[in-house]
Length: 85
Image (cartoon, rainbow, N blue to C red; front, top):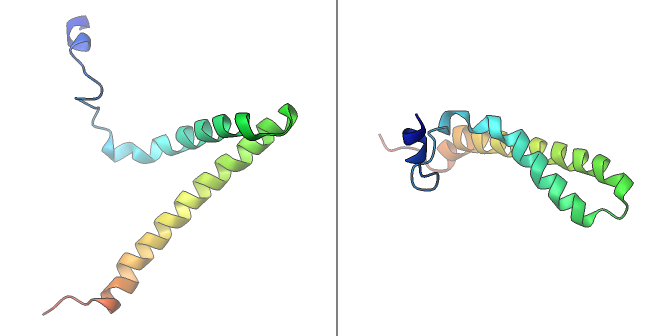
């Protein structure tokens, strides 16, 4: 097993986790907002609250953008450019 692990090259042979991309949305949004707000918060006491708010904003925006893309592809695009035949 250690020889198999030593042969793994993360940037050349990434893990096949494409079906579980949604599971990484919350940790990625949390870490981005924590680092950003650590630099931008005016007071250290407001850091945690502002990080939580920004995390929720990122997740909500991703959900709404996904829903908008779905509606555009399913309902608007067939009206704009119908398939021939």
